[in-house]
Length: 128
Image 1 (cartoon, rainbow, N blue to C red):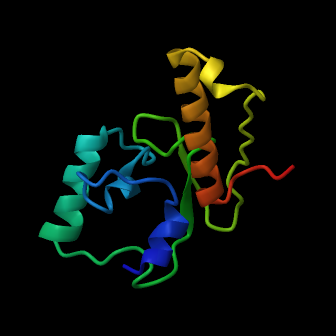
Image 2 (image 1 turned 135 degrees about the vertical axis):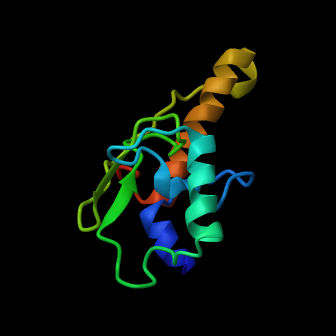
C-alpha cells in the first residue's frame, strides 16, 4: 500500500511492535478489539491471506479521526467519510519557566507538546 494512502487514512503515530496496518482495525464499527486483536487481525488479513492494502483497488471512502487524541487503540476515535474534515484540536500551555516546575507539571507540558505535534502531523491543529 502506498505510504501516502495510509498516512491519509491514519496520520497518527503507529507503534513499531504492531503490524503496520493494525491501525485500520482500531475502533472499527461493529467490532470491538484491543491493540493485540488489531495486530492479529492485520497479520491474518494482510500477511496470511495476502489481501491487498487500502487504496490498491480503489480509493478509500473513509479515514480515521482520533477526535483530538493521539490515535492510540485504547482512546476514542471514529472512522469518518474520506471527504470530511477531522476534528480540529487546540493545545495550549501557560507561559512559565520550565525549571521552576515540579516533575508532574513538566510531564503535563510534555504530554501537551506531544498532543500538539500529533495534531500538526494529522493536519487537525486549530490555527490561531
